[in-house]
Image 1 (tube, rainbow, N blue to C red):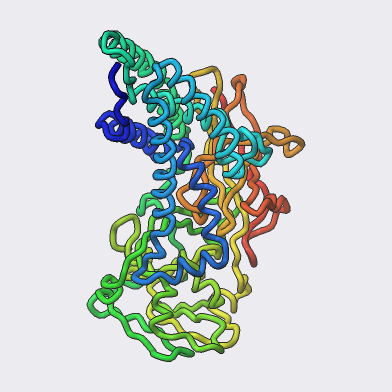
Image 2: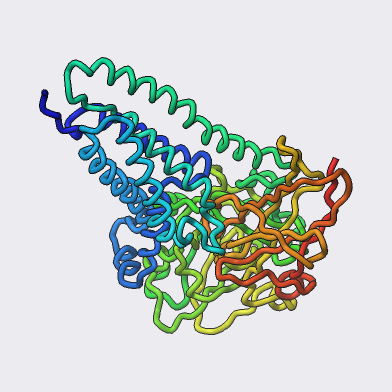
Length: 489
């Protein structure tokens, strides 16, 4: 009988670990399925909100705080890989049926009894408010990855005479598992394709040419980058004047963020979601040195437009002075060469063609506030039905979809009604890239051909249901549920 080698010193272990990690990565980032590292990250991510940890992270030099969540995600993968190493050490001398059975049992118990509860989804994902991690797909992914890893590890035969037979069994088992493991991927691909096939559904990222734009101007400013200057003054210790090149020389950040106009009616299209690149405003304010008595920022633009918002909003991690939209320089209609992005408040305060910020110690009434519009302009929870004609799913059902948005609060759930709000049915949410972006939703059901009146409502991340009272946009933004006739053919 030969000595059993340490599996951690064999190439097979690292190949198996790399293959399982890659599979988990693809399932999470390509198909939006919750792999074990994602569930662990969902729990570890809450640590970033603990005050002393938050302060410690945001005190890191050289802009390292921007990478905290990515470091935490890598840590999650490393922790799961560590458990994989322990399992491989134990499994080295076991035949493949024992190894496979143990892997499946550990995956089921670990995901259902530990990771899903830690992620806030309840025991085996059965918490009533678990919308982020459906238990079926989460458990299926975990079981599939565990079996994949266990079979790729191979076996260390106890007797040399059985080596060839053991290898043949392992290869046959791996081939059989490959066919079985392909099923979740096919299902995931079909689920992803369904999001893309829903008629009229908004894309996650709005193409720049389709992103709404509103201004007070008949002709928008067309500024030259070489002549543009951005100033920070007022109640600061060191007034700043920066060029566009100065901004680009500072550490850039990228933020997916949804903008919505305060004049958007219920079901309206004055809303869009882009990926913005720029500089954190709080970094610029730190360079200028905000004086203690300052409470508000006054923003002035090249078209003589002005607005304001509280200093607290300027210090948000997501508040940036942006110079790229979807990877390209801003267009003139979207504020070239730079505009402000402030999460949680309506678009009129996300000033375009920005030239100056002043720190003041009193409330300032801007262009639209003097005309009766909201001064705080906090985004109200909204939802919209994008689909006018339902899309067949291929399994006897049809599907509709749309968007929901609640500013900084995020979206917890979306519900649809077919009886004018007498009863509600939970829609499925597509995981969003950020809490400050809109969320795509869909609802599938078996339906006879005809016309259906569908109503939609959203529940924000703080558990508050969208305001059902019909109100016009002036002065604080529209409220009410969106209703739409949907045709099934």
